[in-house]
Amino acid sequence: MKNNNIEQRDNFGSRFGIIAAAAGSAIGLGNIWKFPYMTGLNGGAAFIIVYLVCIAFIGLTLMLSEFIIGRRAQKNAIGAFKKLAPNTPWFLTGWMGVIAAFVILSFYGVIAGWCMEYIVRAVMNSFAGMSPDEITSSFVDFIGRGGKPIFWQVAFMSLTGFIVVSGIKDGIEKYAKILMPLLVAIIIILDIRAITLPGAGAGLEFLFKPDFSKLTANGILMALGHAFFSLSLGMGTMITYGSYISKKENLGETALQVTIADTLIALLAGIAIFPAVFAFGIEPNAGPGLVFITLPNVFQQMPLGYLFSILFFILLTVAALTSSISILEVVVAYFVEDLKMNRKRATITATLAITLLGIPCSLSQGAVPLNIGGMSFLDAMSWLTDNLLLPLGGLLIVAFVGWVLGRKEVEEEVTAGGIKVSYIPLFMFLAKFVAPIAIALVFLNGVGII
Ligand code: PFF
Image (cartoon, rainbow, N blue to C red):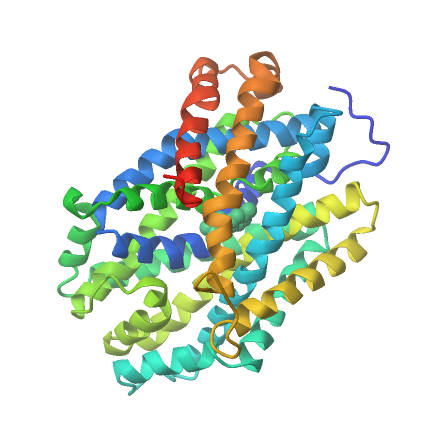
């Protein structure tokens, strides 16, 4: 397809850069904070098996769909639908994505801010000598304050804006290429520490020996919802990143590599956490407080725990940062291409607006009683994305590729660089039927219809 843009669009410069950036987007708080606690709440290995099935059949299909839309259109999430399906309401799918980006990053920035505070606490050795109750109350007290969590949220969002303002090659790709190897190195060190603890076996058993009696229907739906969040799907992040991938690259292979990397890191995060949790006789089903309450307890008792606690919270912050830049880019790309702002203005405007929306999320943790539907404002935003925006966005995206773009265009795009593929019939079947039906189930469950 001819590119009519007079201005050259910024692109990723290397294959490693593409993988680092896209895997950086996928690997985030979802892998290291959320996946372990969801696994803990849903009984361990059985949940993981369901999650893997969701990733393999639906996640991968949707990721390739997003890459195809983005690279074919060479546009941001909204512009892509306008270009590929002109004069139809399909662009509303892109709109939903941009809204989801606002919503997700608003609460994501808050939690990432907590991770930064915990780096400082770890460095100051503040968990030393605290009882489990004191560790819990110091966390609850911190997130319930007005000023400090917002200070960290603003710091984290500024860091995100700082990287995004430099563009794709000189900003996002450059930092992903540094931060992702760092992340992998830290997680491997933490894994070695965890599995060499006496009593680690029980944690590994919890992770890898399935007990299907613990799995509920709701657990299955949570696994699918989490597959979207973890792979950054359903809101146009991978459409936006796909638009920066050169025509020479093999999109199917890229989607597969990113999916495998994301899944491996989630498992490695589980291996870093559960053996340690079990080794110290702590219950695994701690919920969202797992990394901020349970782990400081664990680190306190662990030989060299001081060092490992610092590494762990750096890991969380780095993972969050490479994801937050991809979320911000969804909004910035739209502002730049469709609203014709320059990159600097677009980044500042988007960062400010999202940070402002994050403030009520932060305050809702105790400082101000901001509740929606019985949930704190932050939990409500997270619920809205997991159960509504991402599944609905994902459904529309995959159905668009299956039914509107169709086999001929899909084939043309995935074979663009002279690449031979044999998965088209399977992919089309998944995109037309399996993925939309499965996603519709999550969605209907999310809105309470089933
Ligand atoms: N995938 C990220 C994580 O697992 O933390 C979160 C995320 C990033 C969700 C980008 C959605 C998104 F578009």
